[in-house]
Length: 310
Image (tube, rainbow, N blue to C red; front, side, top):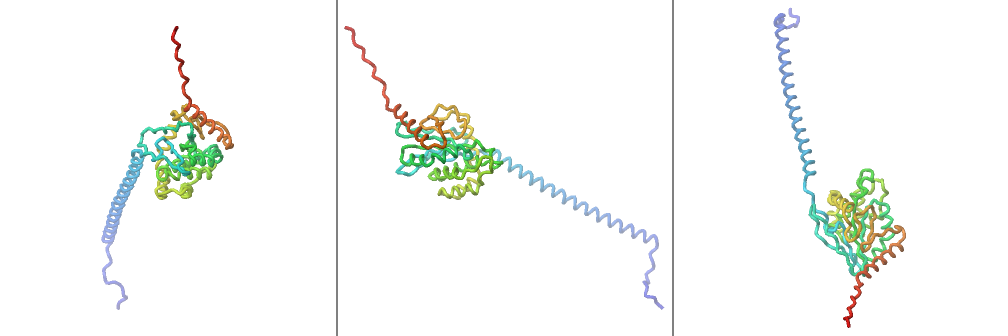
């Protein structure tokens, strides 16, 4: 009579020990295979990470050592010269300066019938904002009528005064972008930057807000200007132009360098009057222009002819 159990003989102790040893050997072999596989995976991951880091470092090095690009077109003097033709403000076109090339100073009108107004401004400078707010309309009228020319030098003295956003530098770069691609819109863009001037030590306008002002100014090739703003394409030029303004003689004047912003010159003479009184600046313009006129029309006194001895 069967109880349903197995008919196989029960393993001996030696057989049980041998089976246990075989099982342990198989486990060890499996563990070694897993360890070898993990080792290759780890090494492969390290190699990929090293390659990625090397590529990143290489990119950073390339970006830091790539040659400086040219400056903006229409700013060969480090500023843009605006004149009036038939009631329209027209930029003077000049080629872009090559990297490291010295600026070419503007040749002023010395007839004494035109006021050559030159400004060095920082778009974050509150005193520049006061001067521009006070005098922008009258300067526009003078330039449109041909009574004055205007040469604007955007520089960045207050780059570290905008909570880390470098607004001063970015705004000057944006002005250079407009001068380069759409110089006919420069006067309006310059005015809009001051009309929307942020407070010093604030974060300033972001790139999107600056691009919106460029759009309001009616720039041509808006997409090109926007990319130039986002890429800070003329950052190096702004830095170099700022250094030149602070360390080199100011062309067509007696100034050894500028000491701050705004620095405003009319026919080479520095305006140091009120920033909030338009009549005072207009009076200065007339005086400086009149002095130039006097100098340009004065003639030397004739040399007396000696009377021959009798």
